[in-house]
Image 1 (cartoon, rainbow, N blue to C red):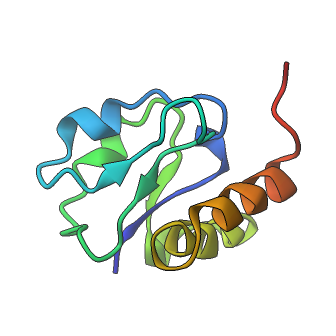
Image 2: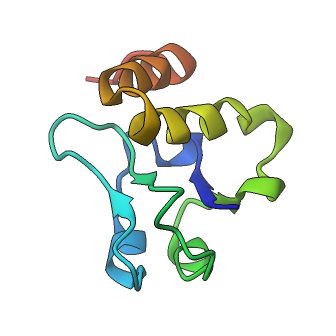
Amino acid sequence: MAYIVTSACVDVLDKACIDVCPVDCIYVDEGVDRMVFIEPDECIDCAACEPVCPVTAIYAEDDVPEEENDYVAVNYDYFQKSKDDARAKVDEIAGPPSS
């Protein structure tokens, strides 16, 4: 099980989660990604990221709200398939970036 970042992070990118992660498994390509992503194979399920998220965007995979389930696949796709495909899926789910 890993932790999953959901829609509340999109276009917020607070990154407090990155600062507290003891294994550095949270990634973002600055200027490209609209949210952070947690590498499921590196995540040790310590939950350090969850309480520091100011927008409550991070959940244990088993606790992701039903309406946020698309973000489970997006998170895995970012690392196991294609970052570009994952980014396109974020755009599809969340809508285009606000200007």
